[in-house]
Length: 232
Image (tube, rainbow, N blue to C red):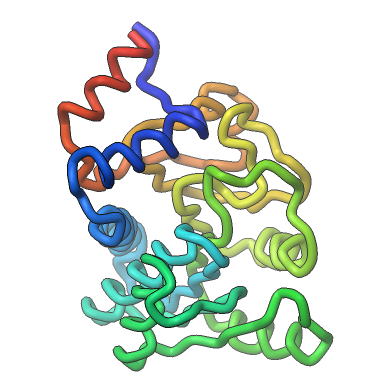
């Protein structure tokens, strides 16, 4: 029997049907995703070494905000590095940014379109104490190679030899082919949502995903089973 996998398009469709067809708010799916990732990371990091969470501009970054909150709630030292502008009440990720801000969790925010040498030095200063890294930059929707400053960030993370937990898909990896689109984060673990991504069946993807863990985000079982049956 073929493993249960989802393509990029199927992930997007399933999420929208859960939200619009079943009434599960997107922010609830994000909360479940982030909490599941945080619980996994706490098991992987029982010594509570500091964690750096790299958050991008979309829902992957929103997952990172949720992860930061749950780690902080349980006493794990954490700092978020945000490479995006998040606006109040503009979307689910922005809602979770507001919560992060109000909670007093340490974060540094950078403008990706204005990332100069001084900003690189600031990032490196705050990144250095981390023992674990969470890659919440880009998820399954990425279809092009990472540009600046994300290509530089990828190099820094990979050269650091710090263990990485990727959120859903390592940033820079095509989720349908399992091949890098260009620079790609090399992860020790990947917490992917609902099901394996189709590209993870490619043996070459293992070098980038590391060990893959499937996280339940609370999508209704009847909906998930419909997609599971498509791969049987």
